[in-house]
Image (cartoon, rainbow, N blue to C red; front, side, top):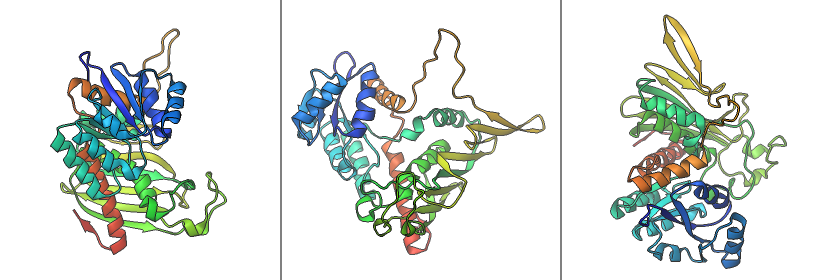
Length: 362
């Protein structure tokens, strides 16, 4: 940061996620400045990005190491392909930069552990993008959980179930390049929400099962188009039971293709000693009051009145804003690397458990 408290940010990688999320929301954030952008596609490509977003006075770098070497840059946002996340994050932290890294955290548990170690060693802040925390429903629900309104949350369901929703582009279906299917792609987000709401990061036992049933069949009903069954080498659905050290339990359910009508977006169902919650039909808090069972529907989009529009900033704007605020004030980022490391450890255990047919003890 400079003397005025402005966070000068360097972007590493200027593809879709940088242009669709990071650049526009950094431009909206007071106290943040885009100081440099880098991409392997080089100067002409970067110049077009600057022109598109009206960026001026920005350093353009074909090599991201120029961004890391700039002493005037205090934070780096890493928006590169997944396989390079850990390497560039560690280099940036060791160069004295705070780091926001796009998800997934890393390609392996060992890489994720090395990222956490680098953050501790450098004394710099590291956060991983967990965008589902910042939706209006999940952000509100977290405040209620933190206030103790649900009591002790001892059972949760982490959902992301698609009847048909197989991504057919890129390497999503290639286990060698992607590493996994919906458990990795969707389960990471759902599990993160459950652990965050429960504020419980001490897993003890994981029992998981992966299924490869519908991928080999193909589908004309897939909204993203049909796929080549021979190239579908990841699971099409996966489920797990996670037991925590304190006895709490989490049921994880994910699918890209599953013959069910019970489809669910990335979300959680929570059961606590004082109340529960679900998003089956909008966010609802369920409890008992005056001798009756009560369902309280949460209004997340309040009606407006003439000449007044309530200020609401959720999703990517809130995610970027909270991160920049943590750097300016010295506070903690909303998403801590140790939390995402635990998520990755559990997800890896789901795959290991399914492969061995045995429960994995952590």
